[in-house]
Image (cartoon, rainbow, N blue to C red; front, side, top):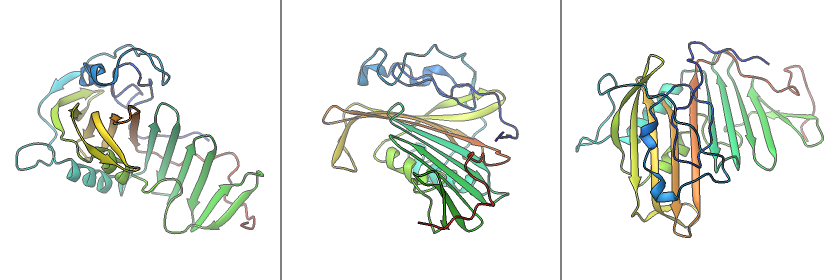
Length: 267
């Protein structure tokens, strides 16, 4: 199915991070130097997550134009920014993608407000593809049939459509500073960055973060358009996260197996 988007700039990278971060689709061309100089924390050179990426053109920078919530000491109030992000997406059609550890897992969420329909597709060693709409949940079973049941209260594979809890999880314990405002394709984005090489941040699964580098890009409507995040744990393992949001989806792309006319008995 063809997806139509309203007012979306041509695709390009939000950020070109240090080597090891894949070259992925993004909505805006952003300044490369946002993530420059980070390789000392995590090492350098191409890794299994992909080759190094050629830097993108540097857009015009400006310190004006986007106001963000601040703490009493003048730093970005990231908790409030993420809450505003959820609110901003609550009335918009959008597509968001989250990629963890290269391509270890990739999750896409499409929300069509006009049709009151949501699609969630998560690819790991297996694939989950679910459409929720009209009070029903449609999912392709392992045998190829389409299993239909009540929509329920939540979405499969994700806690929230907007990624609110996911963002909260990874910004927790980090202190972000605003590094500037960049303009790409006529759109301004506030850039926030947190970097630490001496931390003891606790994560789920009894993991302790000892180093982290994280960058957020926020538009004037309060939408977190991008997050590029890397954190190293006490056992030496590294987790990477890429998060992107595109707004203005005209419709949710339906998988080939789905039609609204199917009526198979849930199993």
